[in-house]
Length: 314
Length: 254
Ligand SMILES: Nc1ncnc2c1ncn2[C@@H]1O[C@H](COP(=O)(O)OP(=O)(O)OP(=O)(O)O)[C@@H](O)[C@H]1O
Ligand SMILES: [Mg+2]
Image 1 (cartoon, chains in turn cyan, orange):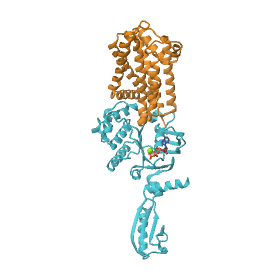
Image 2 (image 1 turned 45 degrees about the horizontal axis):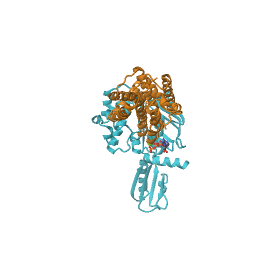
Image 3 (image 1 turned 180 degrees about the vertical axis):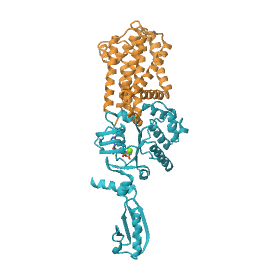
Image 4 (image 1 turned 30 degrees about the vertical axis):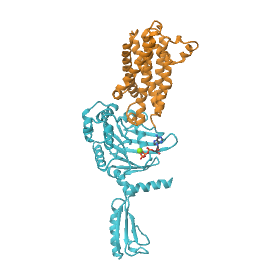
């Protein structure tokens, strides 16, 4: 689980015209993990994937995959990397199974109809194998692109927004597929705008904005570091100051003393316990309240606050 | 080192893609060639004297063949690479462990193969209108293959250079067709008045038409060796340009 499968050092990309889409990115991906790259539109996610997959020429930095230097030993490296692009681009006139078989051949592998069948079945495309791709729905087209990317049995798979424009049912199904890939030992790097997707799938999360990788951490560690419990307790009578017995809690009076706000915890559940203790202390101090609202911060909150910091620094 | 499996995949897929439009891509040139033969071969040719001992209708065959061959090969090859760029499907090729060798042999080989099939069909069509003998059939086939390969490479460059459909069409329309028309398809260069006979020699297509005519009838405006040399030179120049394009990723990689 610790062996590096991909190492990016100082990766930068400036597009003609001067736009810096990647700014000195360092990233190491471990074998067998699912890594989610999160960032808003234009953050540089697709550019990063493109640089590794040979679609974008990096302006600076080095890339190693499976121990091969991508600048010199790109053939050996690319043979083991699969890519599902963000855009639905494939020859729309081609029947499904032929498109998938072509991908396998293109990567230099001998035809293997049994393997193609297995891939198509696993993506529920077997019934559609003779259908022209243009006659498929958007979600099915995306699965065809996944099948094409899996045709050469890659060890490292890039999924650029695999669930964009896919309904809830299919998205769950996609998560299941990605889980199955991990079972088979495939390392997956995916990009997404859906926080719950990263939360659901990823082992580690990287946050990117303006071409800079702001933060990379284990999902749980990130939650622990930045996770917060927020509780709003509506008071029956407004208070002018905090009772001494609750002063040691991270609380503040808000809304002219009618609301007590707790902000604390670390994303491991510590906050919930403290809120429970806080309410007991309030009862002991004979402070009456009419309602409690407790909320755990999501990855989205982390994301928004990080981006805020990033913008503040710039 | 070239990966033959990848190459074969590209080659067969390109040919399969052509099969989808096989009818159009064959019927159009057959029709055009037939029209030329009816007008120039039968109608006008009947009133024309032999040129260098060759019946006029037969004389125009190599030039007509060249006319179709250059146009079709160039447009086939240019579309073959332009369309994936345009639709974005090129991502797969770029992300695959294939380099310039696989791409070239695959795409250009497929375009050249289509051209050879087309050439055979045109020659068979011509047979319906005129009797002709090919003096050096082996050399003729080799020469047609060389020309097809060179212009497939040329079309490939065009398809990478073009960033819109207009550019894709303009080179064949603006240069290829006029130069072929003026390249001695319908006449021998020494039938031109001075100084046009000398000026005509600046047209590279003259050498191609003349070279093919030599393999057909053993007579030509210029020495066959010169024609062959110019064809090989063009092939070499195109190959170098493409190697450079792949090395730098120009217009292929962002
Ligand atoms: N070929 C290109 N030429 C010039 N600029 C480009 C090119 N491709 C992307 N960019 C710019 O680079 C920046 C990063 O783009 P990129 O596609 O990597 O973002 P992204 O994070 O994938 O966004 P999204 O979530 O919308 O897919 C954007 O500002 C974009 O406009
Ligand atoms: Mg993107």
